[in-house]
Image 1 (cartoon, rainbow, N blue to C red):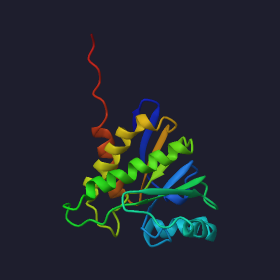
Image 2: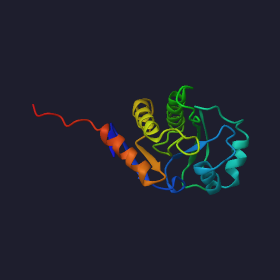
Image 3: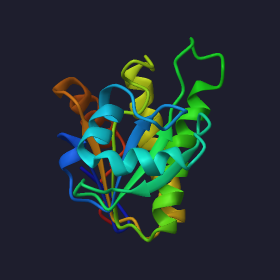
Length: 182
């Protein structure tokens, strides 16, 4: 766990669809119409009204995000962020991934959300290297928090212990060193 100002950042091994937060982030595809992994799980848990709302959004570009209601989820909102497919790192994948986290926080701020949960965007079938993705996720969230003042709790929802350890390590590495006595 890490505290930045008034915001607590933590990693958990948890099913993101069970979290009672203001917003969960969906690792969506450009159609926003559901898919595999966390995307499919969120659509199943939210019910068919989520799909109907997504059909009205006209898709979403890679690196961007759009927000919907949470429907049957305990979360009030779903932020659908489209991460990049890893292609070797030479096609702007890192910046596109960072953009997903920035845009998600911007949308959460616009809705006055105080809590948000992120999956490991692009780390499943999109094959983004996990260590690099975690560094981008944590770094971008920390950099963006000053512009998202309503957010006071960020959860990195991990799908397994290996991903949890990567997030825990990254959060620990970003802890401020203890101040020296005067």
